[in-house]
Image (cartoon, rainbow, N blue to C red; front, side):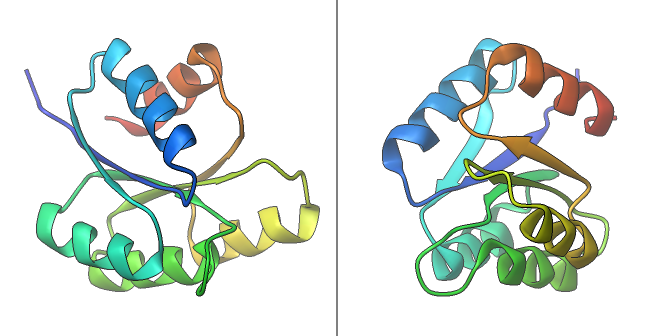
Length: 121
């Protein structure tokens, strides 16, 4: 069994806990978390997760900035952008920054499973 480490970056502690719970129920037990850009970079460097779920609206530097920083550290990293706002410009910016996919918040197990199936190989 391959253990896949996942990073969840969101300034909402409640959403981080919800997403972590969904990930654990889906069989992903190596999940780390961060609440903003600086903590996200620090945790990413220390933990080296394969997949990072990054909220696009973070305090201070944005999720787009964090996506770029993560991919500068590890160009093979998989970043999944997240937002509760459907904004075509934000979605485009996140994908242009290197995010592989976009997940609308709040999410559910079906949507999460679909994203994980695509990117967890």
